[in-house]
Image (cartoon, rainbow over all chains, first blue to last red; front, top):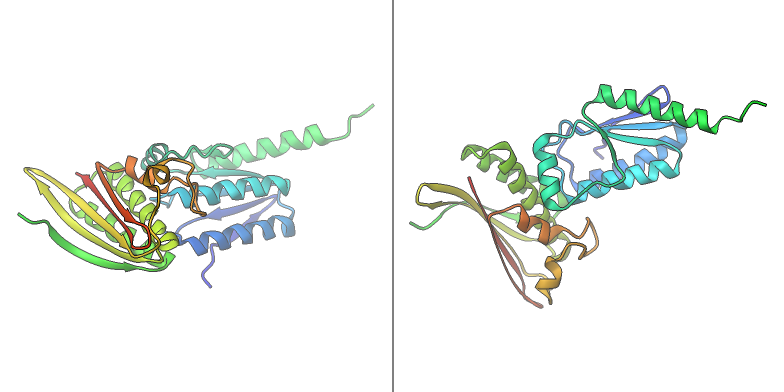
Length: 129
Length: 134
């Protein structure tokens, strides 16, 4: 079956959605991502949607699910590269994507993800006496 | 002048949903829709086509070019012979969900187009017609 590839880069996983996903493919991605987060112990996930010219309520729900699921598995998620026309449409559709962190492009997203993960590592580290 | 029917598609699966929204995009592009208007139309098409697959057991989508004076637009008619919607007013509300998605299918789709019409009969099916002007 067709699958969206998930790449590992250091502590992070990178997902770049380059095709117009049908629902089954989006659900498969959700499952694969959960599996890969556990397998690789990734601390962050970058989801690039710059190729998507459409995000409907189903795709939005999948993005929200992936973010929530990653958080439960101790990984932060960033969605990057949303097109302006897609953002305008989502607002009118009534989808706020609450709880989803975004960045303009992959480079900014990666920097932000590094910063978030570093901050978390610091606050989780045992205090020196 | 009667509207010019461009195409009729059978929509039975989530793959067909992708095909029909791509066809709608193609038509909107041909007519010179702005990128934002294309995106709004195509997103509405995706919501309604999915509804039809999930709730109506599939159906047909008719796509046509409509004119009103100098105005040009795209009209799509989604027709299924599924269970129908008992309370349309309720179904149009955000948060109403048939299962998948955020329950924004109908209400959300209405906000993305210029004209929206829905006729449904329980046990007979549902017909939704949307028009987006250029």
